[in-house]
Image (tube, rainbow, N blue to C red; front, side, top):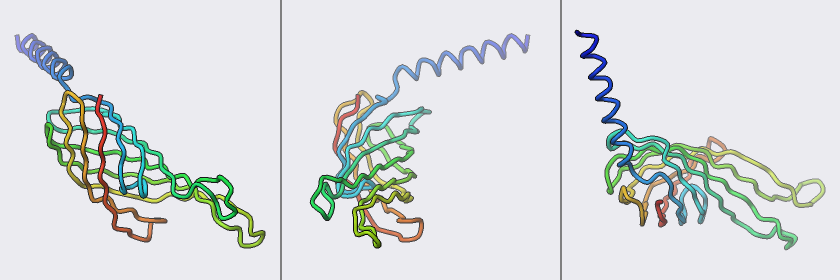
Length: 167
């Protein structure tokens, strides 16, 4: 009898979880971030990975540029790629925290040949802030404190403001 009761409870619990998944927050969002971990501005795509009650876990990937031309005035843009994983808590008003990496591919002067040369570096970042997003999607607004630890040693205070759309 206990075995049947345990199976019944497990089935009921699984059914309830399956029902809550159909009511979950929209999983995709795209937004422009001014300042933030992508530098002076970045375009970002974010995907919700899973959700339990009011806690949501997601990942983001962005693209930014700093200079479009190098010192020879040739088109040779610096590329900045913010990558992060984050957690949110809330319904439409969310507290948000995250950790990630910033990959920078920057054009610099070669000290021997004086030609443009690309260098790639990885920097750490974290984010803490506020996010407005209705569970059914639509307008997204984020404001956060998002310092970058350049070369894993130089701490740079930074903040970001984002507007976008969840779908």
